[in-house]
Each structure stands twice: as structure tokens, then as C-alpha cells.
Image (cartoon, rainbow, N blue to C red; front, side):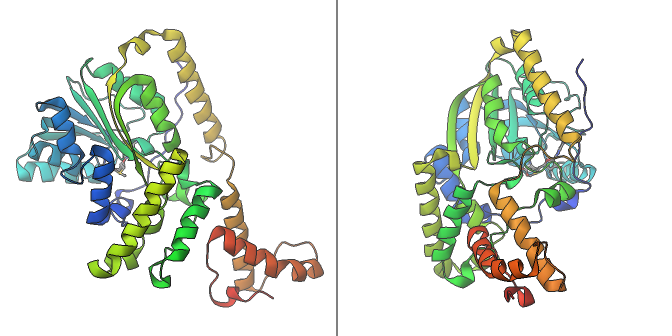
Length: 376
Ligand SMILES: C[S@@+](CC[C@H](N)C(=O)[O-])C[C@H]1O[C@@H](n2cnc3c(N)ncnc32)[C@H](O)[C@@H]1O
């Protein structure tokens, strides 16, 4: 039996359902629906029901959070009942009591998806809604999902599938930065590039292997519906952007359209820039019989996790923008505190600093504030 490393999860539930994302805008929901199903309304749940042709009996919902997904699936008649699995006790409690209060047949088990035993089936549907990008042991988990579904059962996945820990490549960051610059200044995103160490400290499960998710799903499922949902411009510029999220409809509508048009154009020009996907598949039972292949995948995953555990939770090399952003932050804090930056000599620092800071600002799209704005 291969080694099971300790799996890290967030220290509390309060980090979930607190931020504001691009899909808080109704227009973005329409955009996503259209990409996922071909129509702006009524959305993926109805689409799933239409594909099935009749309600599912019982769904397993991965990392079910506050439970809104399964409550909605039951209310809409997509599924008769559901079982949610979730690690955060407070969210399990919230989901359980909201289902009880609404009289809906949703039950819950508190467990770690990476290592826990899923509650007994049968299930004819497994739902991954914004869950897979929080799973470290993707191979192990989606293999178990393929095992527990019957051959005509369905995996429905709606998730972030972009770069792990939101470490976007420079070309994607620059494309979003360019569109951002076209917006009136007060509607621009701050475009803060996520710091991996901060992310690991805040929620070590966040986007832990998001970029591997589609590959693993395709290993274990015959995907019959896959739609890229976009996101490289829209998600980056609208998420956390209070000015646009709070703007009056007549003020924001045109800018949101501009952003979404750029989003579509970029994903069409280069599908590798896509950040979100909607996927439906049926289990590929034959793969589950290939013992040699399965043990290779297990070994690969265990080795990766052991390596990351020994490396403070880091899986990959830093990106260019990550390094530039870190350099900018070091320079910023040195300027703010009046301490010496790390440049080797005073003269060299004088020559190098203004152009370096200008270049960093340009590439990272970040803003220097206060005293830090005056190099010298
Ligand atoms: C982005 S939220 C999505 C929640 C829900 N599926 C939804 O769409 O609203 C991710 C969820 O994954 C849960 N989670 C993270 N790591 C987990 C783990 N190892 N086992 C079970 N749940 C986990 C978090 O507690 C959180 O509720």
C-alpha cells in the first residue's frame, strides 16, 4: 500500500463564501451558461437534467460547502436526494440545518475527500462543483468516483481548471493587464498576483492541482460534454473588483461586455488560456482493470505529494510574474522602511532602481503607493 501523506486543509470555514467573484454579476452567469450549455438560461443544472432525460436518484456531492448546490439540484428536480461530503464542520452543520429547515433530502458526512471513505452508494450522479481544485489526491479521488458510479452514472464537473495556486503565465497576465488598461481608471482591477506562500498559509487546498483536474477526469471518464468557460480576462478583472461589481447597471454594462468579449477572443485564440470548464462524463470501467497503469498513477501522485510535503507545500517552480512581484514587494517594503534594498552597491542601486521599478510596475501591473512611489 503506498504512503498516504498528511493532507492539509484550511484552518477554518470563514475563508469560504466571503469574497466576491466575477459570477456575482448576473451578466457573467449568462455568459458562463451560454458557454456551458449554448443558452444564457436556465443553466447547467437544467442542462444536466435534459441530458439525462429523467431525474437522478441519488447524488454524491464532493466538498459540498454550505450545501447550496445540492439544495438547488433537489429543488429543480434534477436529483431526488443527495449526500454531501465536506471537511469543514461548520459548513457541514450549516448545510445540514438548511436542508432540514427546507425539508430537503440532503444528508452530510464530515470527511477529508482525499483520504476518507465515501458514504455507501448507490449513486447515479457525482457532482464536482468548485471542489476538484481543492483536492490534492486527484487521481485517488476520481478513481474512487469512477468505481462507485454505475456504467451509465454521470460525473458533472464545473470547476476552476487554470494554473495551480493562480500562478498565471506571463502571457495571460499581460493580456488581462492590457484589457485592464483600456478601462476607465476607477473601474480597473488592482491585479494583485497571488503569492504562493500566502495562499498556502490562507488555504493550502486552494487551487492545489487545478491544472491537473481535466487530465485526471479524462483518465477515468468518457467525457461526452466539455465546454471551456473562459475566465482569463473576465475572472481576473471582475473578481474582487468592487467598483465594477457595485456599479450601476448603465455604468458597468458596456465595460463588462468589453471584458467578456476580450475573454472570448483570448480563449478562442489560445485555448490554453482557459480557466474554467464544465464537463460531463461516464466512468471508463475498463481503465479500472488495468492494475499496472493504476499503480503507476498512484506512485506518481504519492511521489508528487511527498515531494511537496518536504518542500513546504510547494509543487512547482515560481513563475516569472511571481518572481517579479516578489522583487517588487521587497523593493516596496525596503523603500517604505528606509532600509537598504538588496542591490550590491549604492551606486549600482541608484542607477538601477528607477528603471527596474518602472519595468516591474509595467510587467506586474501592480501599483506602488505612498512613499514607495518615489524611487530615489
Ligand atoms: C470553493 S468551495 C466550494 C463549495 C461548494 N462545492 C460550492 O460550490 O459552493 C471548496 C470547498 O472544498 C472544501 N474542502 C477543501 N478541502 C477539502 C477536503 N480535503 N475534504 C473535503 N472538503 C474540502 C472546503 O471546505 C470548501 O467547502
